[in-house]
Image (cartoon, rainbow, N blue to C red; front, side, top):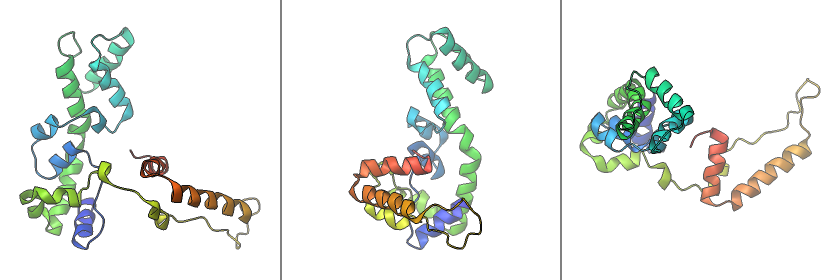
Length: 201
């Protein structure tokens, strides 16, 4: 379903799907897992707990508590335990598992949806359209027109329940503040606001 939605959005002049990391995009558009793995960075890991634990392997030496955290993660994913000589290799393996191996099935399903919409040959043969269908989030510019996409709260005059209604003055005060804040905010601040609202980096 997600793949069909992405494909139809592109076919009908809709928005692209931003936010995919480069390694995931590589896999999604027909690249090999080795090519995707070579582009991995720690920021590609969506789980902040895994990201923090895997990041410990960048340290030259680990404390007992850090070794225990990394060891627990290695055991849960059937990977060798950390030693003084395998930090770099283990870092890459854990990162690859956390990002690429866990998304194989969703990527397969999205590809299937893209194929059903007929844009799969375009994705495979024309890498220059990838940035149109899947724009890089870092290049996305947010401007105050984001206001048009907000459904502002409305006072409920028909409610029979007592105590649940927020006074109109308070609704107006808060929405007025948010409107002014959004109109005057920089693109970086708007990105932060979107992250706060959606929980997505």
